[in-house]
Every structure is written in C-alpha cells, then in structure tokens.
Image 1 (cartoon, one colour):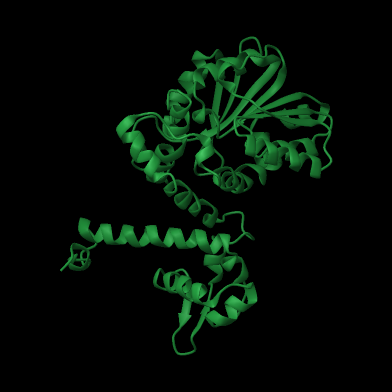
Image 2 (tube, helix red, strand yellow):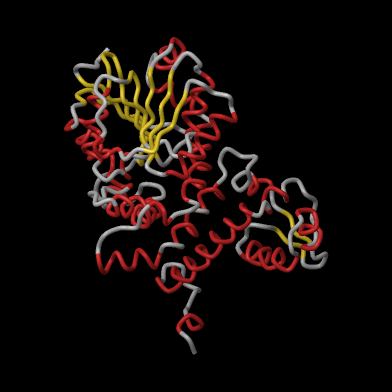
Length: 361
C-alpha cells in the first residue's frame, strides 16, 4: 500500500493527518484560482441550484471541465450540492469572499500559487546554483498583483489610505509633484491623477509590460497630468524633485533597497514626505508565528520578491523584512521622522509616513 493511502487521518493533531489536509487545501487553492479566472464564481452569484450542464451553458464553458471543477469545490466544502437533484449552488457567505462583486475577494490571492508554481524549476536551480529568477519569467504576476492592489490600495485609496497622512489630500487638491516608485500597472497613480487634476504624477517601474499597460490606461482615461517610465531605480537620484513619493508594496523587491530609500529621501522637497505601504509583521521568524498569512508571505517572498532582487544582483531583502528592519532602513536613509500605522481593511500591510529633517513640515 502506498504511503498516501495508508495515512491515518482520524487524528487531527497527527502530522500525517495535517499533511493530507494541506494537500487538499493546496489543491482547492488551485481550483479556486481556476474558478476566478474562468468566471465560474462570478457566474454562480445568485444563480439557483443548477446542474453542471446548466452552469456550463450559462457561462459558455465546457461541461466536462465544469463538472470536474465542481467535484473539487463540493468535496472542498466551497460549493453546496444536492446529489438527488444533481444540482450545485454557491452559498452567499462564500460568494462574499470569492467573487469580483466583493472588496474581499480571496480568489484573487489564490492566483498567486499557480503563478509562483510556474517558476518552481527555476527556483530549484537557484537553490543549487544561486542567483535569481527575473521579472520576465512571471508573465501573469503584474496582472494578479494589480487585482490585489485594486482591493487593498486602489479601492480605499482616497477615503482611507491617503488620509493616513494628515493634510495630504488637501495638498494633492492644491497641486504637488508626485512620484510612485515601482508603480506596476499604475492603477493607484491613475486613480490619483483622476481625483487630483491639479497635481502632476510620475510612475517608475522595471517591467516594460507593466509600464506599457499603465500608459494605455492613462490614455484610456484621457489623463495629461501623468507619465510612466521604465526605470531601474538602483541608482535613482533626482534631488529636490518631488513633494510626495509613494511606494506601494515595492521597496522590498528592489535590488538595492537601501540605495533606493536614500534616493527617495534626497528627492523630496522641503515639506515633502515618503508614503510607503509594505508587508507588515516582524523582522524575525519567531515574531511572525502568530502573524496572519506568514507562511503564505514567506512563500511569495522565496518564489518572487527575494529571487527577482537576486536576479538583478541585489540583496534579496524579501517581503518579510518586517517593520523593525523597515524603520531602521528608513532612518539609515535619512528619514528621522517615521510613523507606522495599520489599516483595518488590510491585514497584510503596514503604512509608513517618513520625512527627513530637511523635509519636515
């Protein structure tokens, strides 16, 4: 008998049972990602109990694939099933966490696992040979990251995120120069440019694909107060150029984050500030034992954040650099006034408002 078949799963504290549970959960995450990308979850919102054929027909999908997906969703306790009627339905409390109608769509996050798995062989070679996996090897990462940022940053940006810094919204209304470091697809910057037409916005990112998408988005929205550039920020140096620099979940990816932070500090004008959102938690493993999603974030870091930095010959800081190290690095970069806060809607991130002595208001 194979080891898997002989595992005793009746004792929940037994590690063998935990392993079976983890295998099931990993498989469900893969299928949740598929349900998101195919529109199955969205299509089942408010849909009456239906057969696999009815669900497939309503969404223009192949019934055989839908039926197998439903098998995983039912046995994974995601979708409910009436075996006598042969029907399936998505409970509303599950839909609230799995559909695009929600601001808490965890199916978006589930997509990271298949994206990261696509570079597993490359990561194995890095374990043996060193180095890293470059951005170009992650064709869907910016797409998925943009979806996540849409929930955690872009949607609450005006009403909840920017007001973390007192007076910032008013300054943007009056008109200031803003730089977004590691802008990705530029969703946050586009939203700011729309909301604050008197301000001027610039976005830098290493990814040509992401910048091309951002430029198209700006054109689509008819914005003339924004521009995007493909830029390696390792040697970023534009003294006294900006009133506000933002970095949404991007500093830990940099090849030389210390140099980037120093460049940001020097780029701020009198009264300017650096607004940084990055992964929260502690800077040591022991301090993250009770921090939500720590295993997930260490995995994302190993499979993306750390390795893309190493691929550039960087330090490989990683996503779990933690609040203590972040504050130390901000101070070393020249920021002597650093405030850290958390927002209720965002369990993953910490928000930093940093000023230098020269920029203090």
